[in-house]
Image 1 (tube, rainbow, N blue to C red):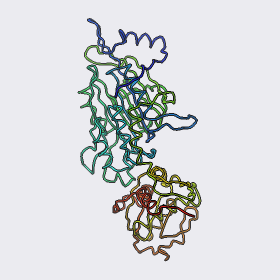
Image 2: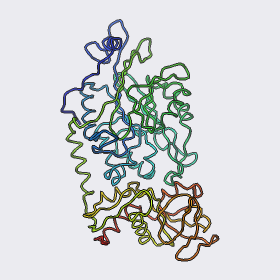
Image 3: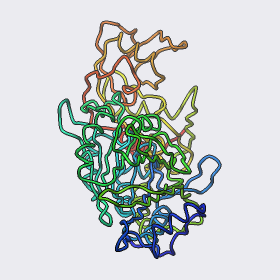
Image 4: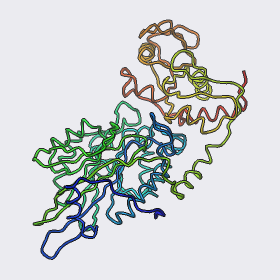
Length: 484
């Protein structure tokens, strides 16, 4: 992709920093060298994190009509035209989860395609990338040219790294090492086949090898600010941390101190793609080693006055067409209030029970996120109603286990009834009969329920081959018209 727009302007610099910039940029060129002096290089790092499937402009907090992948693509190309061949583009994770209908429908595939067009140089998976399943994440990673990096997550116990731990990129003779570090929530059934190490332990293992190969080390992390600060303080050899997960809007880089006394620069760029971070490094090579002499960092807002990149806008339109499919027509409103009776939740759990034979069906209440309004009901509506793409699993539980699990979290249920009094459950019946604590019951439940249950961690389950959203789409097609 090539930009069609004018170059992006520099911020106003302080006098000392302006002097340093002029010193490092004869004729504003990077990689400059005098016959007798040191080699100087100006590197620009663009970074985003926690975009969470916000591919279209949206309102966020008190900001209106912000973000959007097509606008961000324009911003990226503006900087690249200003800094040709000397720009690095990184994503610090959480791309798939909590996303809009297009991200949900494609399981993050649309996001990865757009990142490919934008020309990302590397990404680290966030914990949200694992919720759609490890196989889906691996499949999406295989479809892009840029490396997906993660040094501290492995398949099975004692297995190999899920993704390469690091990558090396050379810009104007500067060898840059990018080390990926993240985490996943091991309570989620999709991750039960994985193991994870401490980010610090993984970094300490790989950094000696990486430092031998490169001049500059960037830790690309999805850990959150607390773990990032600990990483900087305890692991030597890191120059820059590009972070995510805690959604920090750092308007300028934080200067941290490493265990060997070196300076570590730390950046994050907020959430939902409302901003993109820019970090300009001015490096000097003298006596065989590169050093960061000065730096400048800021956040670039993605606002409505930025033109949309036509290539990205066209791809978004093409990928979104299946979401317009009308599944049925509704004459009723199915509300989904945060508390009390939820007609939408009851309708959905009944649909699961109907399509997957079992003694009972259970659906985690927070997994139902919107309702149905009168009019056509589309595939996009299905993705809004259930945006988690949760698998529906088969479980065999004793009556005692079932009662305890029902007490832990609020759920919608079909085939069983119970009364809740605070955190206590009573009067439980299955198929109309009082529960027998010793009997085994066969139920179907969404994996989000298991994720949030302390009492059923790592309990065996069987795949049904269905997800909550696929069952809802099938059911709406069969119903055709929703009536009172």
